[in-house]
Figure (cartoon, rainbow, N blue to C red):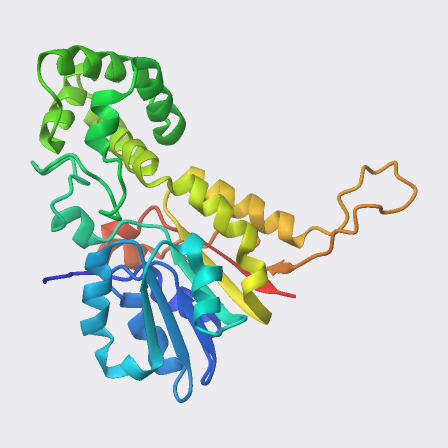
Length: 312
């Protein structure tokens, strides 16, 4: 299986994770293993990497790519919300670093055949985990106009959400919408002339993103993960998150801010009754962005935002 991948913000990730020999790190989203392959030499000798991915293609690729370190690697075909359970299975009670890269891999866009890209003619699937029961085609062909518009507006911040949803309802009465090209052409047909030139993105970009987020429950899973992340780290352990759109970054930002906040009692209370304690120290007061040089080499890096924090 060909699995081309360019890790985003690699040097920044390695720096914020503070990779050290003999320590244990988790790559929650293996993808093409670009980050994991760079982490492993830095934690030898004696280090351990635990790798997760809900896409089976990524696990198959990881077994091959990380073979030189196979005695120090444990792989799981699972999404990152299951990390507490998987660490327990591995007799690991806390780790020294966790990486969460929330972006799509090039393989998923270009070679998976699951309709992630509006530039291809593939089955309208978009499931990162093919064991999941609901595909993008299911949503597009079963949801009401109101529900579709809500998804496009809420997850894709698409201003034309109602028109796109209405067009989908009209078209699917004639024939089911089953391919990525079919959906992309439908979306293009309702967009104003000159849309791409004005906004510098393909007209289907936001709708496809919204469907992918909905199919894979990406925001719900991210919120659930951020609630448990601090508990999984050793004192001084690092959390590093790479997000790629504002909805993800907002969840990460607010979650880290909450972890760094102690008392949350109203200011007029004479003394604290909530007993909330700080659990993390934020290392990135502002989002860290890729350099211009990296963006020139890898256009997929241009929307990346990195945030990191350290367990107190």
